[in-house]
Length: 408
Image 1 (cartoon, rainbow, N blue to C red):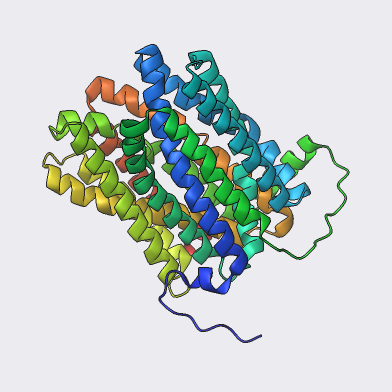
Image 2 (cartoon, one colour; image 1 turned 45 degrees about the vertical axis):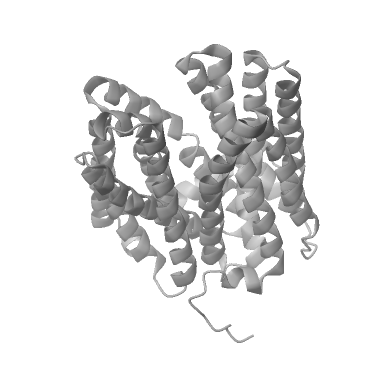
């Protein structure tokens, strides 16, 4: 079959692949609801406890299951139909969001319920994320995989801009329960899209090894494949060192830039806009730019921009730096994700993506903890700059000494 003509249209993959269009539309709507729930959940935790530690504990409860369940979830994604697994997880998330809505609306919510539901959501996400990421290859094929991942990133960042804005209006008009109710409704959109996807029937190979053997087999594959291992290491370092700049943004905005709550919100919006522009740029140029070259440039740029941000004290200049930091961040994340998937065989893709989720999402609380400790000791600007310096040094060292990265 002759190659399809390439265009600079970042939405080309949505036009070409009907299944992916159905998936992306529902997923983007659902992500807006997810961001609404995150906004409402943090404020609810503060209302119930009046304790910043409990606010952090609720966020940790949603992320900690990723550390425990991602690796066995990868084995599951390689053994059962991915579409069916994603649909089941999304349906259970709908049930969790509906329960949270009812408890808040009826006035029966407690910290125990909030922590429990956050943990349930994190457990479902730990199973769903590697299956959903590996499913994209089935929807578009390897040829358009990087374009599709870039568009997924654009949907995520569009939701990050729209979701909190809608949440603010919903809370003001109808109260906190509205955030959770609208999130529950948003799951209907993604389930409707998934139900309309039609994939060829594929025979699932019969597996006799135990789950722990499947995990070890996947880890051995990653360890024995230099380019996959190198990409996983980049994801790990950038998760630990890159996350704190978002976590510490309230402190940085107040103490370093002299901004209030609205100014803090503006800075987050600027990050989201930069990430959205970066994702759309990647979707429009992925077929014309060598991914390895793009990964190197974005890795070095991301670290350098955070190093610069630590020295900025002017709000408008900080906004400029944050815009490009958001762009570099999403280019780094999406390119790493795409290269891992395109270089993984079908039999291992679920497990490779589970390890990626394990380090990228599971390690982020560690980065937040370390960044917060440094900020308490010497200030948020130093913590942000230190994370950028480590990323920049690691990127320079890795690309200078690792031949597998130089060949990507």
